[in-house]
Every structure is written in structure tokens, then in C-alpha cells.
Length: 318
Image (tube, rainbow, N blue to C red):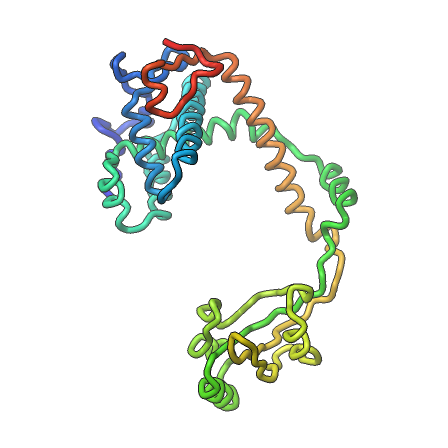
């Protein structure tokens, strides 16, 4: 990607990034939101960016995708209008950090992918920054006002006790080979004292070979009777006898056993709090956005609506 020093076309070093939408000619306007035009070019750019993450989809799916895309663009513009209303901005330094963070999750040839889809890099940068500013608005106006009390967390725990039973489980490493000659090589390596994980990474056909065959903790009720039989009596660190089935020859190393138990409140209260907080934040956000839309004037250009896959039900026409 191009250097990030100048983030948007025509920008100059300044305390804040200007994310004010550009003016749009009437013949390129798809929607006006509180008198502010959203262009066909913006929807086209959004659609092209979306296509990077989708392979072939059916016509029915595409209509649904376009509708969701329309809602996303509309919601983001509403949030940006709200940001201007409350005086929330983004500094140049914050913008640079935001773009750097976004690029970390992208492949090295992301710039090539954008170009192949006909997406302008500045349009991509603008969207990333707009999304970041929109999140700041939501954090300030919604998320920061949601609080979960300790007694709510405890009440949830005691009313959902059955969710916190952990079945008995074993922590395993697994190795599988198809040929008996390979099994002999494996057994010889283990006999020489080589670590099970290292041997598994060399010989095993298991998908987890890259992790040394580590399966993590597996609930006993998810393991076949044949597996349970070869694991019975093993102590942590011990390796099972070979087990042959239709997939090949299996070996297991038992790393640990975990008995069936009830997770104590202290162990799970953090995750319960976070889950309740997220649920309430999402609920409040939906209500808040619905209120913003009710207070807004949204006009869809009837001639443009089919192009972006939007029906005019419940909306005004220009």
C-alpha cells in the first residue's frame, strides 16, 4: 500500500482528518440522508470492496447482500453525522494508527486485490477511517453508558448452573500413519526417546501435525469406545498401544485428565460479565440506531434503487 503520511486526497498536516463527504451531483445521487447526498460511486466502491471477501453467490444471495450493504452505508453515514453533531473527530496520528492496524490483517498483495476489483486505495482508506470514527461514536454514545452490576452476573450464574458443568476430558496428542512400515519408524523414534510431538510433526497424517498432534482437551463422550479403550489406564505422559482402524495406525499420548466438575463462579464471572455486557450493548445500539433513523429524513432515488438492490418499501422517493 502507498505511504500513509497523507491519508486522503488533498490532505495537509492537521490535527484532525477531514471525513466530510464530498458533494454529489444530482444525477449520481442514490440516497439523501438528512439532506446529505450519498452517491452511486460510493455504493459501487463499497460493492467492489465487498466482492473481495465473497466468492460466487446466487442471485438471491446477492440481493440480500446488496440490501445489507445499503444498510451498512446508511448506518455509517448516520453515525458520521452524529460525530459531527457532538464534535467527535479523529486526529492524523489516530488515523495513521488505524490504517496500520487494518493493513496488519491484510495479505501483502492487498493493493493488487483492490486494483483488480477497481477499488481506489483512497476510497478504501476513507472507509476504514469512517468505520473507526463510527465506532468511537457508538462507544461514547452507547457502550460507555451500559453497565452490568455484580449481582446481575451472579444471578445469571445461579440461574444457568447447567451451562457450567464440564464433562470429564482428556488432553491428548495424536498420531496416525497408514503404512505398517511407517508405524515401525514411529515406534523406533519413540523408543530412542524422541518427543511424541516432534515425531507426530514428521510422520503423522493428522490435520494437527503442525501442532505436534495436539488435540487439546477432548470430552470423553466425544471419543469413540475404541479410543477410550486404548486410553484407559494411561497416566499423564504415557503413550498408548497402536490402534488400527480404517484410517490407519493410531497412537495417543495422554497429557492430562480433567474430571467432571462444576466451574466455580470465580472462574467464569468474567466471561459472564463480558457476555451480558455485549448483549446489552447490542440491544441498546439497535434501539439507538432505530431512534436515529426515525428522526432522520431518508429519500431514495427511485431510478437508482434497483441498481443497488433496494426496495422502496417504507422509504420516500425523490
